[in-house]
Amino acid sequence: MYATHKLATQPQFPDAYYSSNDESFVLFEGDCRRVLGSLPDGSVDLIFADPPYFLSNGGITCQSGRMVSVNKGQWDVSHGVNQMHEFNMEWLRACQRVLKPNGTIFVSGTRHVIFSVGFAMQQLGYKVLNDIVWYKVIPPPNLSCRYFTHATETILWAARNAKSRHYFDYPRMKAENGGKQMQNLWHIVPPLKAEKRFGKHPTQKPLALLERIVAAASEPGALVVDPFNGCGTTGVACARLGRSYIGVELEREYLDRTVMRYEDLDGERVEQKRPRARRRKVKA
Image (cartoon, rainbow, N blue to C red; front, side, top):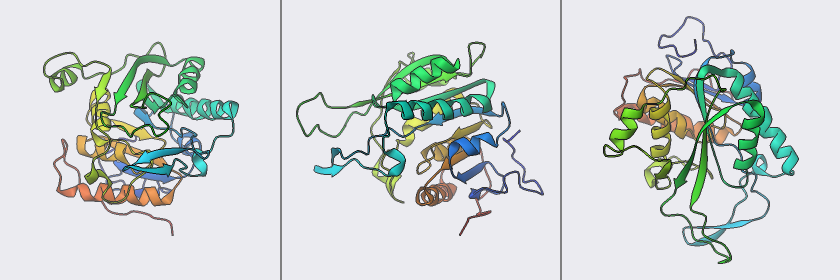
């Protein structure tokens, strides 16, 4: 019911941080558990989630050949394994409620969080469809030289429950893979420089990754939700592919970058035409 293409007299999202004219691209500021709680049961076709990895505890990494801190903000600070798992249970439960009976969810993560996510999915009765390995091709080097270089992330794809009959655009994925079945090992480089021209997010995902996910697991006009919007890569992919989008984000800075990225799309080709975006409501 939220995947509308007509502007209603009264907005469906009066508390939105930002909304396009036709309400096919909507952003909320706040905790995803609260925002998801305001959506109707069984109203969402697809969810992509890139939850906190809880790595901001004084560690270091390599960026552009320099040693830098991995601290990303208070939202990424770890308070212990039990609290992390409780958090994952809460937002995954909220996602499961809003998914349509045949809806699916993709969750990205490293070893720091993905095992908790997978266990939570099992506890909640999700049906895990695939574990996808995203190979980053050109990962940052390992500075300590005491471990294998971290070059991958895991993406879990799951249906709402065991009875779900999930959507999968097999022909499109096969065509994109040169006429061969696409495997669950995806070679995709990290975000390109052009994807960061309005600023970057510390855990930003490449547009190519999200476009593949959205195209594979949803039909044009579907409603896609990202409970951890970041700087809006999922939303950009949806706009380019003709899907409706709801993004939720705690940090206003990243919401504003998402708006800039979305409004910059007006000159780009998309699979389904959409009206020019306009700002409906932005809190001071």
